[in-house]
Length: 282
Ligand SMILES: C[S@@+](CC[C@H](N)C(=O)[O-])C[C@H]1O[C@@H](n2cnc3c(N)ncnc32)[C@H](O)[C@@H]1O
Image 1 (tube, helix red, strand yellow):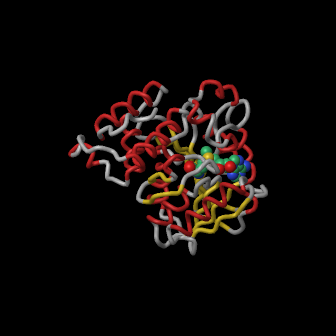
Image 2 (cartoon, protein in one colour; image 1 turned 90 degrees about the horizontal axis):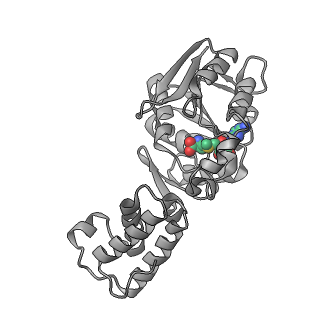
C-alpha cells in the first residue's frame, strides 16, 4: 500500500486501515495509527485533531513501507522494535516472543508472594524478569533461556532499563541456574505441534518456533523443567513455582506440579477467565 501523493493524515490512515484489515489483522486502525506515529514522529493523539494535515513525501514513503510490512503479517511490535509490558518498555525483535498481556499474571503472583530470589525460566525478551525487578525493588532475579539469541535480547533490555545489576541472564536450561530461589516463574512454550497450521501467520511466520511449540501435547518443555525442579532433579531448589499454561492445560499441569514435589497446588485465571497460571508450593 502506497498512500497517494499529498495524502492527508486521515486519508492515509483510512487507506492503510483497509489494507491491514484485508490482510486479517484484528486491530487494523490501531496498527495503522501506531505505524503512522512511527513514520512521522507524531503522537497518535494528534491524528484525531489534525486529520487534514498533509503528509510530506518522506513521511508518506516511510509510512507506506511500514504498512507493507504489516500487510505481510509482520507483528507491529517487531516493526516498531518495542512493546510495553506492565510499566516497562521492552526492545522486541525476532529473537524472542513478543510479551503477551496474559503473562502479566506471573508478575502479579510475584507481587503477592514478595520473593527475594526469583528464577525466570524461558525469559525470552526478559519481560517477566524485568517487570518483577521493576516492581519488586528488593528482589534479585536470575533469568535463563536455552536460546542464546533470546538471552542476548534479555540482557540488552536489562541494560537499557538499568536493571542489569539485579537481573542476571544465563544462556541454557534451568539446570544452569545455581542457588536457591523463593519463586520460579515460567512462561515456557506450550503449543501442540498439530496446532501449527491453525496459528495466524503473524505468529507462525515471525515468532521463534522454539518459543512456541512443545511436542505433541504441548507439555514437553514444562514436563522437562518440572523434572529438573523436583527433589533430586538437576535444577535449583525453588520453594514455589508459577507456570503459565495454554487454555485447557491447567489441570494436567497441576498434576505434574504436584508430582514434582509441590503439594499445595492452585490455579489462577487470567482476565479472560481462562485457567492460566498453575502455582505450586512446597
Ligand atoms: C513462550 S516464550 C516466553 C518468553 C517470555 N518469558 C515471555 O513471556 O514473553 C518461551 C521461552 O522459553 C525458552 N525455552 C524453551 N525451552 C526451554 C527450556 N527447556 N529451558 C529454558 N528456556 C526454554 C524459549 O527459547 C523462549 O524464549
